[in-house]
View: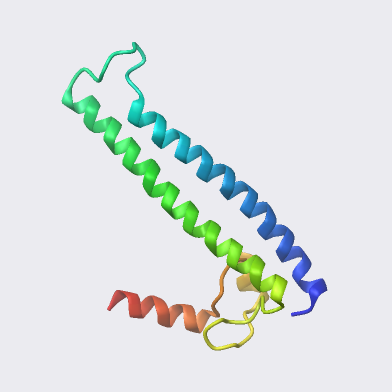
Length: 124
């Protein structure tokens, strides 16, 4: 892919990276505050249900944070591929990744065929 063709994808990835960094920071702060948060009245949770709910919210925040961090790593990888000129080529087979796929998932390192094969291998 030519540098001029990569420019819109680079801008999209930079925007996505900035948003993900903000989301990860926000989720980390939220998860940390749940761990030290008492109820609105400043007391510890009144019963086991409140405590369980707080733990569930903290767990969900941590899971979301993990997902966002993984997406951020994929975006960083795509930006590296743009820098070294390999963006738009499948890292598995080397074939060209269709622009429609890159528009839908700009950080994908795989063509549809290789992504499908990797996904089916994970399931088995």
